[in-house]
Length: 258
Picture 1 (cartoon, helix red, strand yellow):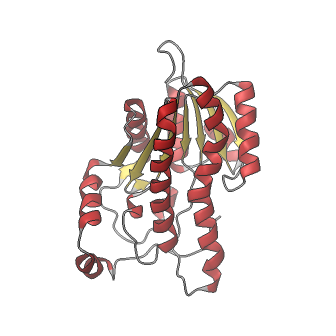
Picture 2: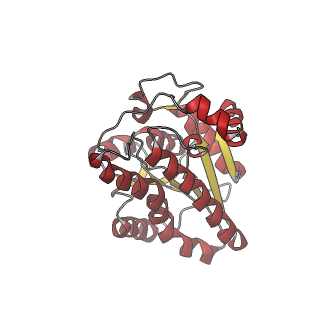
């Protein structure tokens, strides 16, 4: 983390909307120097207005674009104290649907490889300094497979395991890797869900909670606290009971990610 008298330097992906934008506003309100990465230039410019921000239009699925954004940010500002991989795709999928094959690929590329592409350019510079924080946003949906959400559940499960591996790899070098698995957050990503979303929290509140977990360097957390209980119950529930309870669970709408 930065020295107490210096503003933090924070690089955030998925910053053009939702949780990424809320994290940008949260850290920006604390005077942080920001690197904001997203796919929509107009939205990034609007969010960064009045903040100490450097904006990069890039897709986390594009490794070269992420490398260019990271290199430019480091050259201009220096190595960030915190990198938050917040970009992702959430959409329903069905394996039997031919149209969903490309959607499966897009979800896995964004939610798993997107984290790799985000963190890769910063690992070497952070190791050279012997410090830094990498935070990846997973999901409670990655605890067990949800019907109609095979791509999303699988991608978030893979993200959690990847982040655990990375945490063990980088711990000897003074770099903390933090995994946050939210439940439902009030964002455009969840507002399309046609079913009740228990314990849904405002996006600004989620950003504050995540920033607090990063400050505490908590290795792995679920938010809000109520979803910690839900996640534990799902994880340890016998297979037969899980199947009975979730076989007919409501499903996230299908559609091509934008």
